[in-house]
Image (cartoon, rainbow over all chains, first blue to last red; front, top):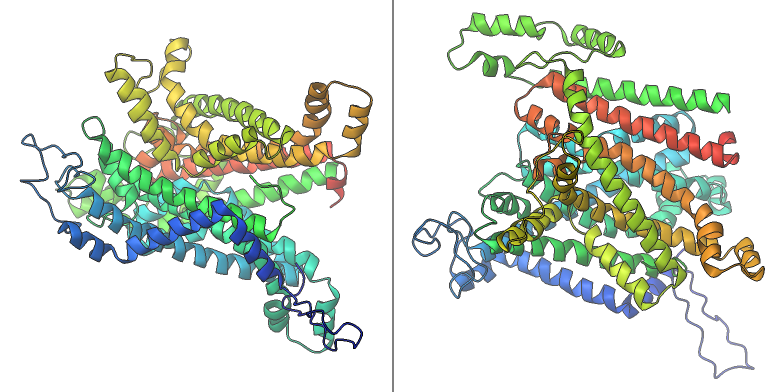
Length: 314
Length: 319
């Protein structure tokens, strides 16, 4: 990726070719966006992602159509006489869970947690990873060695076991889930960014900036960072579904956001005791989770292709 | 080569040591009420103090750490709080289960991933390629526990209800006792792990294969009139497999602790599930022992991959 936004407008159209329109320069960002817009799969995924976000944000409004609160237990109407979950019906669109709560309402409320953790943990991961990678790649020497060892340590830790242990010490909560995920994900971002920075810091424009007296921080943020943004953006879109899956896994193991707050992983965890009598209990939240991660992955693939058209798509 | 080897091993040892410090700091500095749990609700302060003394929890953390490290170096990871069983023998009992799970799954995903990757790469952008791509992405997007649950629902429960009790819901059967039962018990867990991982390998093989098939020597091989099949498998795949082997080594190392979720969905008492249970019981020696063992496996796998790489590609040794 070269420097952005250098418009190659023909500044003084010569008299010989007055009718030719000036060639408008298109930045790499613009080019990527134009490629992305032509990618039908990516666009459909984007629409689905937007819909999921809207459902999550407007969850109280959408839930008001059913008249059910996410935590309300409808012991009379929502459970069979034997006290088992009820299947999908006009009253409970996607059935009920074992406490007679409305699964549809709980699933759309669960989307809030998944997306919140997915986005916030990813942003923290990326910011930390980029800063570490920038510093390690730019300064080199002892800083690089120390940071590289830290990256090695984090990447060697058995993630799930460590995450579970950490949560067992602190007790589960939304913020702990976010912190734990970020704590174990920044290292791969740092590794990618460091690799990119190593080649960029040798470039002439970095040399030029330095000879003009720019500070290290200024060079890193204004000259180096913009040129590693493309891989970072690609990585970000592909990281979100992984983080959403991890949050669901933590909740499934009882270590995410504690009940009664609905989370997809938590609902699926509760469903394990009931899947034999209530298929909807496992299939609907599972589908919600799968549609979300799949859409982000398809969109992320599209973004990658858009930034690097030579890369073979998969 | 020797200096490269020594350097890599030293780094591995250093990383492992840092992990022991981290793990120890995390568990032993955190407030723990394990003595209270062990003593029961009616335990007097004296009893609790006694328990703490017996477990060595009354000593300063650095002393505890020093003892732990000294014993660990000699292959002694301590004893569990509840039954006094050696942590090494707990790990030893769990290894065959996790190994059965990991190796079986690894074979499936490797074969599936490489085969699909090659098939895709031979005809890029064809219907087959797109189909396999969609297939991979579908499973890649699925968190392991979800795939496990869905397989349990469809392949265990629905089939059993329908009169085809082919797969049990989980558990573990010793290979030595009943080989057929071993396979039957492990098929669903194998599929769970393999399908999720195969996608990565399909991707990797496809990309690497496409690159290799564009090389001059592949064109030379083709122009010699060698059959396409031979070109693809003998000339192409051979060099395309290098990144796949790297990934494979790392994944196998990670799987020692990483199969925890699959193990708990299917009730297999492997390394991961044992650790999860220990975490619930605050059984510190077991947790610390397993976390360090699992990390050591990752470090060892990375080391082996590096060595394999250096052996295959002399340029690596110099960097």
